[in-house]
Amino acid sequence: MRIARSTNGLIVSLHTMGYATVHANWKWFQASLSGNPEKCEVKMKRLWILLISCCWMGMLSTTWAQSQWSGAVDNDYFNAGNWSDGVPQDPEAIALVDGGSNLPVVLPASLGTLEVGGIQLGVFDGPGHLIQNGGTIVIAADISGVESAVGDAAFDSASWTLNGNSTVLYDDPLGGNNAGFDTDGSGKDFDVGKSLPEESLGELVMHDNSVFRISDDLKISDGSDGHGALRMDGNAKMTVGSGISASGTAIIDVL
Image (cartoon, rainbow, N blue to C red):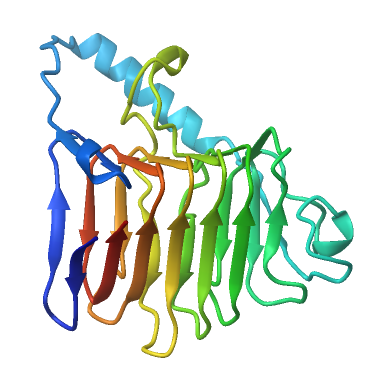
């Protein structure tokens, strides 16, 4: 079922004040509101302590590394020979797939859990394609100024395909002890097809029982020049903590 489409200037959006859940199985589609923060009183002394603490934290240096895919050996994500600076597999590592050989990059069904700082597919001037066949990817999204994306101002297409029981957790989308949804992340949006030219397309494709959770916004083809698509089938599920927006030339297919 095609539920939304926007072309050149026509903007179609789904916004919530709380959490939204989209299921590929349409009868389970739901959007819910939540909120009601408790009132609190902050005394000046405590406020000054907070400000001083924030300044001190800002002075601390943050180290992170970006490793770019070359695909020199094969299509295995975990083969160090395929990356410029080793396999990205910690919260301070950015996985950049922007061109290179042996695309798409493949993550196995036996993945387990992979934690990275960010994943960027086709964000400069080359294609970026990733297939995740299982496991959980935790994207910390704590690095200032760095957002994960599938296609962003590149000249080639980009895609991320989730199969089986694949799960993605972007920017701390779960509450304490993974008991529920949370929007205490760092406020990072997830873009698909942002500012891509007409001949290119950014695609997020979800099959089977895959799950993608985002603490803030999912943006499809953000801006009037974007070209992006979200495609879901089977029992795939997408949850967001803020909203889903579609602009530019966008397709959202829920089958």
